[in-house]
Length: 216
Image 1 (cartoon, rainbow, N blue to C red):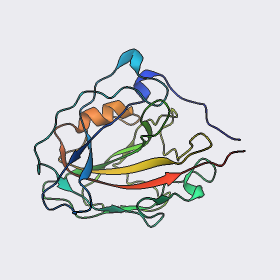
Image 2 (image 1 turned 60 degrees about the vertical axis):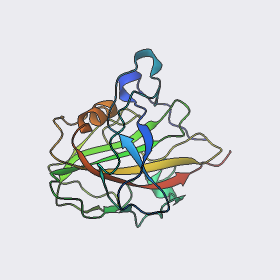
Image 3 (image 1 turned 90 degrees about the vertical axis):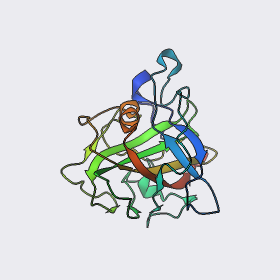
Image 4 (image 1 turned 180 degrees about the horizontal axis):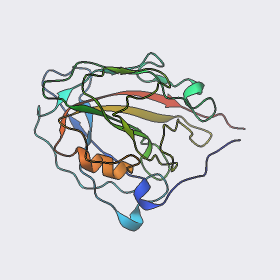
């Protein structure tokens, strides 16, 4: 069994906060799961790949718009193909999203695993994507303006699903429409990306997949 053990302590990992926020005009099948963009470093409570939930402020209902996010690589709620995981080629999947409300300057993408043993684990942070962009191809070269942050494996790149063998984990591919570029350099840690989003998010959406590694 091949299992990645490389991880970084404390500030390289963050547990994004989730809550249910019903967006005006959102699909009746579910309220949009919103990754709130308030974060604090929890010191010793943060471990390898996750940690305690930081504090939050509940935004007023209807304040954020909704993006429709999809992927040609996998359907929402379906299995993520092995080529996008640590057991395959570990390439990022295709993603696309709907037109955002007016006033969007850039997009941020955060991929996390809320089922990780130590708390929510960050697999990818990608920020300052151009506001006119509407999709990313599988393993595509990124626009020159875009920056990648450090993931929970300690790498500045996409790191695909790589859970312990056994039950399936959920993987959430969040896309944020942002009012301005984030004031961050390349290689920012996940907790800093989430903190920088606070007060700048205009709309948000996600597509979710799952992946389980077989027992060996």
